[in-house]
Amino acid sequence: MKNRYFIITSLQSWDIEIGSTIKNTALELSKQNRVLYINPPMDFATRLRALFHRKDSVSPAFKRRMEVLRGDADPIRTINHNLWVVDCPFVLLSVSKLPAWLFDTFNRRNNRKIGRLIVKEAVTLGFKNYIHLIDTDIFRSRYLKEFIRPAVSVYYRRTDVLRTPYWQKYGRRVEQVVIQQSDVMIVAAKSDIEQFRPYNSNIHLSHVDANTGICNDIYSSIASI
Image 1 (cartoon, one colour):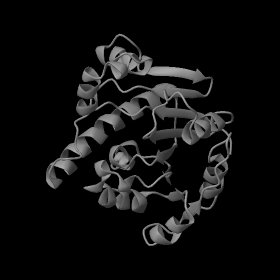
Image 2: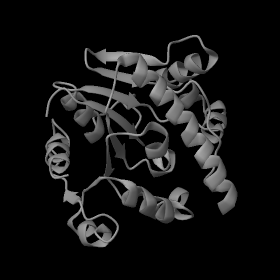
Image 3: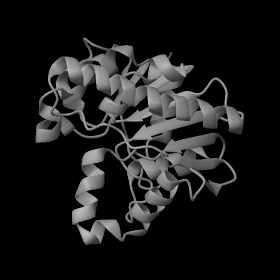
Image 4: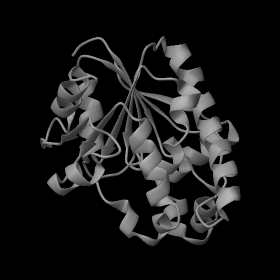
């Protein structure tokens, strides 16, 4: 697959100091395609925690985020000639502990903010008919299909986040919707195939490569549409 446009939303910050599957995937995709990687936006709870944990507040990644929030730095960074990273110039509402109706309302507002930013940067870069790759980021990507209107939506379930307390209240419900509305689903475990096939029949098992991530899985799964 060549000369396509990819937008990636992930739980994983680009600025993580160790390697990661999604970063390797983005880098590999960018060899023959154009890629826009959306760094996870900061929410109010994260910002407050950083203020009380000096280690977090002095990290280069946090300083960069604060510069973008203050308007002192451009939100978009060029990683290579085909890959850009966007740092969100806003703070999201913390929604995971809200009552259900408030969760849905404010999570949708968060998604709208992210969606508007994606569309703005995509237009600036000349992206069109893009493929949206969701790397397990179910809350912040729940409504993005509506707001950014990708040509293809790919949900990559890299890990089972639903076991952790943060996701237990709404994670299962939201993930089911993300699975149903995605054109393709890629999973990391064989057991996930039968579990999630009722929600999406176009489901594929990933074969992660240490260098190229899940690029081959993305190419083959999109070809199956």
